[in-house]
Amino acid sequence: MPQIHWFPGHMKKALNEIEAKIKLVDIVIEILDARAPLSSINPEFEKRTQNKKKIIVLSKADLADPSETAKWEAYFKKSGASLLILNLNEPKSTNIISNEVKRLGVEKHQKEIAKGMKPQPLKTMIIGIPNVGKSSLINRLAKRSAAGVQNKPGYTRGEQFIKVNNDFILLDTPGILPMSYEDKNKAINLALLGSVKEDVLPNEDLALYLFNYLKKNYPNALNDRFGIEELTDFSQTMDLIAKKRGLISNGVYDLERAYILFLKEFKDGKLGRITLEKAL
Ligand SMILES: Nc1nc2c(ncn2[C@@H]2O[C@H](COP(=O)(O)OP(=O)(O)O)[C@@H](O)[C@H]2O)c(=O)[nH]1
Ligand SMILES: [Mg+2]
Image (cartoon, rainbow, N blue to C red; front, side):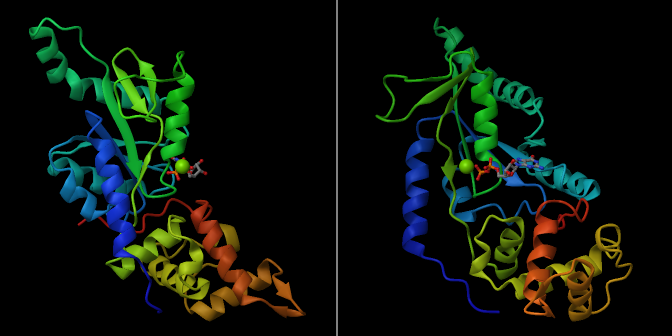
């Protein structure tokens, strides 16, 4: 496989920008894709935020393998993290997050009350790599908010907070974490999930990786969609997909289109609930 190029300079700049924003908030809500939670973490970022209160959201739990998600839950809970497993397309996800924000803020509110102050709304921000559901969550939380987007004077110029409820406000722009490409397999996972532009890696390489992973872990994954009962050989399987779906270009079966279709059906969850990364 070709090397994936990344730019430490850009990475550093992006991380610094997020770091500056994080200074404004009490609680960071980090979204990771439940189908590859570790791949969606940026370790550089973790190093810089060790003493911030954090809620980890495993998003797209509806697309992930429930038995693997249970293992990930145990993994993150063991590290003491505050963890929520959610389908961000479900309206109830907003309440679940609100309750957790409130729970993590109890101490701060108690301190404020002890000082004779009115408890201040907890300032939060959402961060994560591309495509994990940041905008979906912000839109959902904003829609719920009667106040909509409001300007809060006293904070950094240009930063807008959305009032979600009386004890919870949210920075209206998410922090987009740069991807960490230090581990090739993690980069592949992110490409398969649509967080990295696919054209970073050839479709054939991605399809081959996915094929081998399914063959080992989800051997029946192509049965329902394609009627392919057993995963044996990669080329043969792609050929079958091209035939079954009539993917023909210039009079011949087009394997490139088969790779793209295979990758898309996986990404859209049409091959079933599949987790790409096993809990350690
Ligand atoms: N099935 C499913 N799709 C989700 C979930 N969260 C987000 N999405 C979808 O994932 C895609 C990317 O979401 P978006 O909020 O734009 O991600 P962002 O790049 O982090 O802002 C959109 O098509 C969402 O509808 C989830 O929990 N489950
Ligand atoms: Mg977005």
